[in-house]
Image 1 (cartoon, helix red, strand yellow):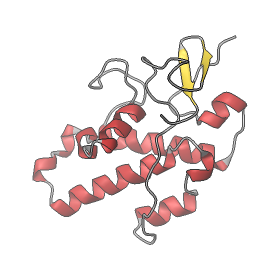
Image 2 (cartoon, one colour; image 1 turned 135 degrees about the horizontal axis):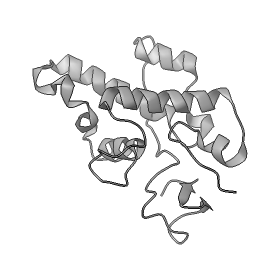
Image 3 (tube, helix red, strand yellow; image 1 turned 60 degrees about the vertical axis):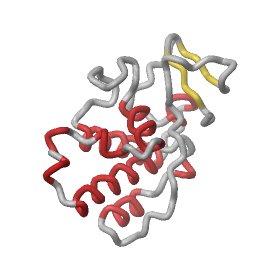
Image 4 (cartoon, one colour; image 1 turned 30 degrees about the horizontal axis):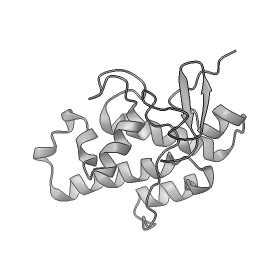
Length: 156
């Protein structure tokens, strides 16, 4: 029997069945990325056909192009520098929520505090656990395979 891993499912739940508050934080981060980008987490329409929203957001973050995931309806060119910084802040927080290790994810209390500027964002996100489904190979990293889905448990 194959395990189907949805875009909102935290890696620790998908692999081990551990459901915790940090699994909800992961799901929240994915939803925030959907809101900012205007795209579904696992639907087509992303720049690369087999890429997932979380992977696209992470790749954009790594190359200092996080604003490229913003929904075109936001009309970034009409936004102030401050408003663009706020969008980057929200993307940063969402990526903190989707880190592979649940211990590295913030609590929802801290997420709310970061969103309301009551808490400084000092952490740098690490790669999410679910990356590059189309090119993942056993030689490249430790993987758990279930049918056609590969879950990378360790960042490259």
